[in-house]
Figure (tube, chains in turn brown, red):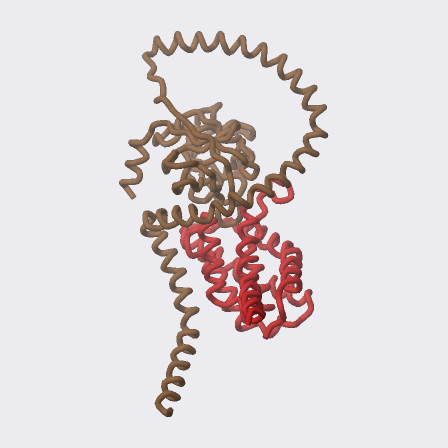
Length: 285
Length: 172
């Protein structure tokens, strides 16, 4: 009886001690996870992809009522706009018809000139359309989770919307993938100003307007200038629209993306057949 | 005998409510609503849930619930793994020591308590992630996220209080 009592006291002591140190252990585990994340991205990438694949079906289910709510709002909003849009579109259509003829003429001219320059066309690209099921845009991270289907995408491929570059594939799961937005602090894209061909790097900073850095001191930049991908490093093909310059201050050029990254329902993930470059990147890691 | 079993099952379900509701809210706020009101606004739902349940039902919402919620937040978001766990554990640690100042007080006091504690947590998370990235994250956006979280607190806590009053028995 006495032995049982002392055993009980002993056990309760251990339990109390364990409770006291549990919080320390869990804190440590959080730091260890961050450390692993910093040093060995492969393990975290794989774990994260598997975890995303497990959690995402729940998000996929929850997104249905969320979309219905958004649709109701959009419906009422659209009704107001529809008359104005109609008038505007008629005028736009008239102008586009003129431009189409002009574009045809330019296409023929371009074809002839390309032949003269022995120009090599870009590799055949293919794309898939992915549905956005979750988005994250706060002070600490900017990303999306999209339903990309089975094995259809690879890490590093380019995500675009109808208006321009959205980001690139960061983590690939079996059915779902995480897309790193161009506004995320980890995003760095070689870009150039379309008008002046000044090159730089579009660097996300977790705000809605990423910065353009590594610009030559003599560069002439004006608010409203279009910024496109430069194609340097070969991950992004040149010429994809990214955004326009929204402010130019000393050492701080802000770019406003063409795409409203908070309002994405579908994105296009393009495979530019740059697998060699992407796999080389992975090998380096 | 059957009544006992039903009662046990009902009590088990009630114990699941804090965790299940927190996870659900966490996921819901990651959904793309496409509403202008929610553009670039993501309150730190995990913090609100931890604060609410730690004050109202500390008997059910324990350390491991906090850890699990942080882990889930890390899985869905794209922040470095462990950073959301860290922030929620920090809130847990602060609350276990300061709970007596806010527990059982009026809503205004609780809200004020949340403002203070979440400020510490936001600043700590900002600092840890700035060290992680080896560069300071923009402080303005952190302030904005903090203010949004504070603004959302009454609505989220109202919902959680409704859940508690409607579906949960009083603390033993």
